[in-house]
Image (cartoon, rainbow, N blue to C red; front, side):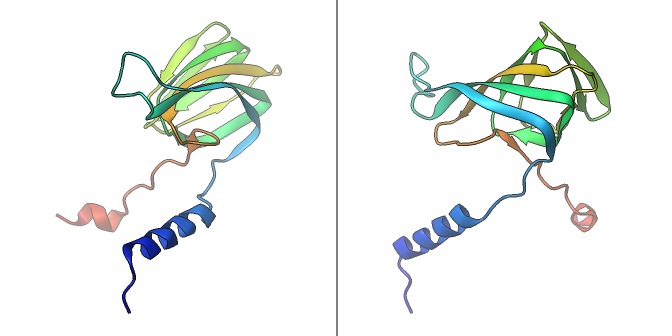
Length: 150
């Protein structure tokens, strides 16, 4: 039986469209996209390949997002409250008026340990066809067996 490349491609696309990747653990944290535009301008190598997104994320008291990465890099601005940000062994408390950068490829978590909501404004660079949250589970760690192989 001969499967044409088109049929094989359709099969693979269908499988990926209906498979649900594991999510990122979160509680009492919401995010709303405020602006999303396709990149255009003098940086021609980026034009039409990426988009810029501005979104507002609110962490209610006790709200958190578990370990995750982001599909692209971004700048964060703390509009109100205090956010405890954990990256590896380092914990930083970002306060109202602070900015910070996330490259997207480093595992981190965030939690609101206060009694007031935290509002974060996110500015992100994303692939042009990306939809939904930019947060994604971190890649699986290599198994111990894989580490032992030369």
